[in-house]
Image 1: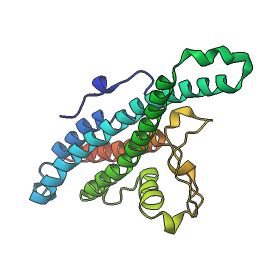
Image 2: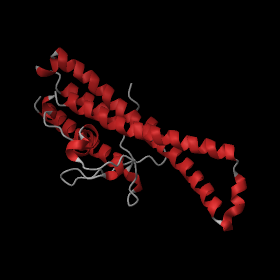
Image 3: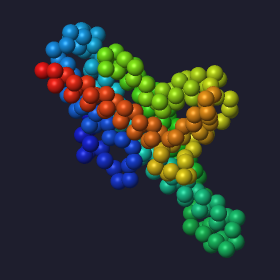
Length: 224
């Protein structure tokens, strides 16, 4: 069962809370329960998948946030130690961490960096599966959240066709730290679009989906 919003909130978390989207989606399904299309077995299966996918990407976003915190902590510690090793003024800081601890922190940073890339890419791939499932519903036939669609199609699935860069590193926006991780250093696609950040793309996705759900629910309730 999808997590309620209150259980998902973490201090400092800036991403959207997809938990409430499950409730909005169920309201949409109930408002359309007398429609012929919604009674089809295939659509019923898609409805179950949509609920699963909403919860899935919700959990991924939380993992991204937690992993980002761990990665930032390890990076900060490594930065302080490396600074101390080349700065005579802070040379006494060298003895504050053993070589074994340094290697352990370095390994942890490597692990969290790998995990962060994995979770960020996973969000886009599974969010795209949610897009495809939603498109089988009449209200969502033309659903195309810009950020998720472009990240999945142009940056991840078909980069050779749309971006001319060999960059792969994950980065962040210094001007907007709450934007979330950015894949491939924010390279521009063929039409000049650049990734604004995972959390901003996720917000755009959630807001677009919620707007369609609320409109579809309201229209069908008014027609009763």
